[in-house]
Length: 216
Image 1 (cartoon, rainbow, N blue to C red):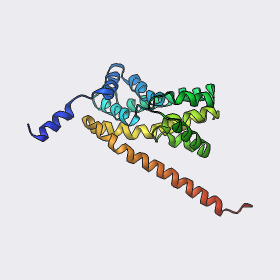
Image 2: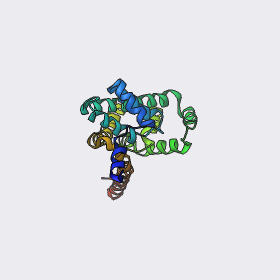
Image 3: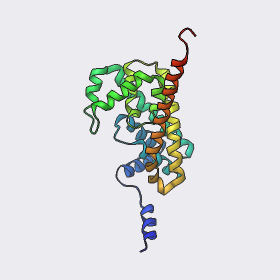
Image 4: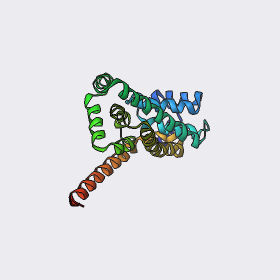
């Protein structure tokens, strides 16, 4: 068998492992299954949305649900998962929340601390853009809850940020079909673009404030 034939056969193989579980859940439950899988990214950060979102697009391309339904259910899952995390921060408080976070496998205290610091510095922007940065996507809801950000404002920002992020990866998975796994390779590039954009925005803001006279 030629290398080309082997590659074609490999691409035709159904996803396995975590990806296989996600696809099976979406095949069984439809849209709610997609919401459940994406929501788990908030509750258990080691599950990467860069993997499960293209799978939702892949499932849509296979007719499990429509493309519009894929965007609706994945965004709903993102928002509901974020609300749960927000509620934990609001109810449990900072110290006990931080103690719980460090017990999550593959998660370190500094992940929580960085999210908390970012929220303190950027507030609303942190919630909106944090949906597009790994780990921050899950943890940014905790300081928002701890600091009691207005729930309506939190849900609105989370919905907008999640919809933007989800649209990119669901669309890519939908277009690539069996090659959905190629999307993950470009996720890091997109995340870096977001981080650099935020950093530049902060620099521009600081410079503009420094140039503005205090009595202006």
